[in-house]
Length: 295
Image: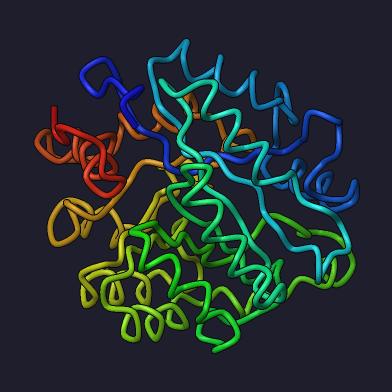
């Protein structure tokens, strides 16, 4: 990641979405995307291209981890290609950090793809969305993927808690929240002790479970994406300031929640002065293996 100049960056956003491919294909069908946009009260560009995302973050002197979500088995919708995300990051190495997403139901083909994406495309991590993909993270079906991720030193990022995708649609669009209880990731962290894990989002209604897992398992981190900080549970703020000050990460959930809005509300939180730069940049730099973390 030689293109990342940490000294120049104000922050590293570890949670942004590639919503649309260069061919115009979206990662969600129209009904689910509309429900998500309504839930988050999205304003502005709801489906930025990868080049537009790069320009957006460059203007703000931030880097962004970017990924698609591959849930084709459950939704029937093809994801934005992982290779396209990685190629965009290669073309914008100063601001974009490529993650990928592989549907666990792809089996051995998915495992081969994961290794190829790391070795040939420089992918730094993998996004899982258990509720949309329809699997429990501790299902042995996914363990082959975790083995590759752990072996290559990449990061596994799991959506946790409620999701805005499908919210308000009859039956939630068929999306089941039970899969995203962070306690299911505790088994993964126990079985893969060297796997670097991020629990994405304040994990409503399982915030205490997420804090317990992150406190107990050294490889587990928490990102703060998907919620305006003014709605953070009090115990999350307390742990971010103390026991988890080296394991909590800034994430926005762009484009449904912008870093501008997130940072404005984060500035009002009672976060210690010495902890704030850890959350905004230093913890992510260390986790992602960027040079001179903490500069």
